[in-house]
Image (tube, rainbow, N blue to C red; front, top):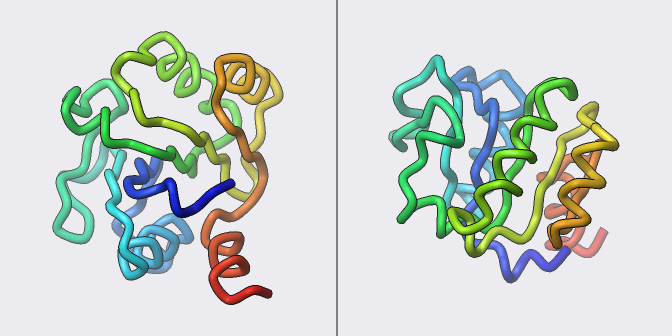
Length: 137
């Protein structure tokens, strides 16, 4: 995973509750210079950034900027997200990485994304991995 090629991260299941892990991870990435695109059907904005109800609602000009998706959804909801991305690759021209947070894994989604040229990481915290690399831990 090359963090220097990542600028914009779409975060599925981003919560507006500061106590939730998704919120802490998003805040960390914002504080470290990344752009985020919140995806949560129950919010209109998070951190002052427009929140989208689903991946389908992200406008094409914005979806083309996404370098990584970070998924904070239960494992059973991952495959439809990955299927949409694979079936709409022209909408996600810069997307390189599909990341499933700790506790999130789906072998079928992993295989589908990998077979379609995406780097896939499962059951791992993006914030922890980024922090380790930044501080050489």
